Image 1: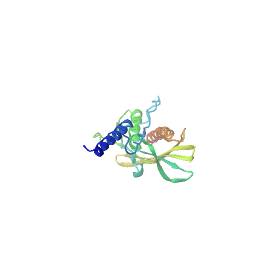
Image 2 (image 1 turned 90 degrees about the horizontal axis):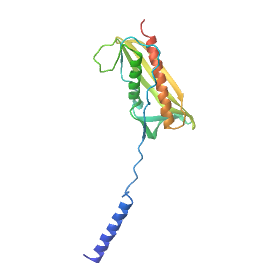
Image 3 (image 1 turned 135 degrees about the vertical axis):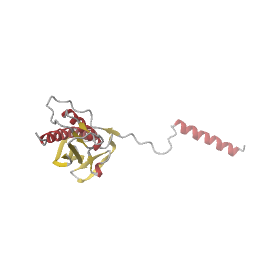
Image 4 (image 1 turned 90 degrees about the vertical axis):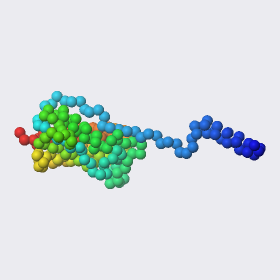
Length: 207
């Protein structure tokens, strides 16, 4: 082996040892994992009388195309309210429409002893409830103050015929001006909206 070649081997070994000691950090450092949020545990059941007394089919909550994502959206109302933005390091564990679907069925099941069916259930139910998510974002009125804004449109069908339709808009102030505060406020807003939809559904049933 020549002296020059020997020196190359030595230099190569020193470089490799340096990389091992430094954790072999070649290339950019990995990005931290994003924080993932859901709507938290469901609210405690109340002792109120059931609002519904006949079977009802509850379709999966639909969403407008731009809301059919797990991104956590916010708007800067003081700058450009028409431009939705997404948190870079925070997201929902699933698209909000899916989270709302499970929440809605669970709350209806507690309010309707006659039974709640899913979209794939072969059993028949005269009533069908369809809900569409039309807005879900954290709206910053100032850099330090924000509210969770949730808008749902509900359609009630009886034997495939339109029985009632309504829009539900809920705003809940966020405790902190960040993703965690927005997620907590959205959870409260979702429970309030679902409670309103259940009451509205019960009010439109035949005596």
